[in-house]
Length: 399
Image 1 (cartoon, rainbow, N blue to C red):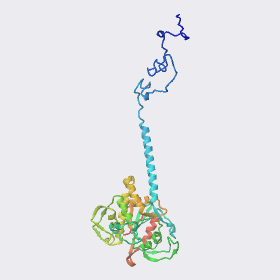
Image 2 (cartoon, rainbow, N blue to C red):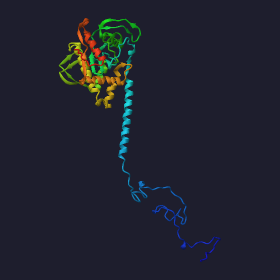
Image 3 (spheres, helix red, strand yellow):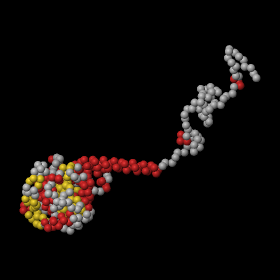
């Protein structure tokens, strides 16, 4: 044994030349620490752990890909991604559909209270709509009135009236000439609530002038015995806006037409009509020669409009759907019970007429009546109404 010298009260010291390093706990891969220990002092182990964990995903340490750097990433789960994408798309479509529904529903002008109509007929099979085109110039500027050849008359009158019946045996579209000679029955005033006596025989459009839509419905029901389930009315300006919103409507003009009063000026043949041209076509009366010819043109056009509007290219395309709905719903006046689904059903029913799945006709006429009006063929009218109410195939035909 070697004796260690004692100096200055300090105990024996080891010979530096013979001191051996003590192994330290450190990185097995020669990382931080080595043999230097803590704070560079040999022979000291603090037991300190930095908390670093190395995995194959971090590029260090051992793992399935082997020790060291460059561990293998797991393959993408395409099935899960597709499932998540599909669910997300369906959620977006659902939100868009619900939002569109409430937006459109809020725009409907439910202004007609059919509950004020008295002595109503019993409801039959199917659904019956009364579609009215009025000469209302509401919201139109002087420039628009001039462009559309509407004139500047105050108030509004019926310009066209169509019964549309959607029943078990198909769709039937019946035009009611505005010069039809009918009885205006006893009725309840839409605003006053008072009961007024019958006004006797008069032209059908006179009922609308007297007390608006509710008296028109009452008069049609009284003279036909057919209950009206829903009412829809549109004015000149709204009609033209809808046509422009769908990009025009393609029509086959049967002959050259020129009418200064309506502004109609067409050459024979297939062509696309814009809003102003379409309005001129359906209003053309004097050149057409009769109100019956005019109502046929109106039916053809409305069916063509519905056929072009109720298509996937319009319904599924927001850049066409929103302008079309915005233009139509802002100017369309309906009864208080009519919803968007009822409105959609009405358009699809009109589309069926264009597709050859329905019947298009005028109310059967027996001949002339006072004041240049038209008298209905009542035996045929009664048979027609019975067939509609009973859900039977319509065999009656008008001109």
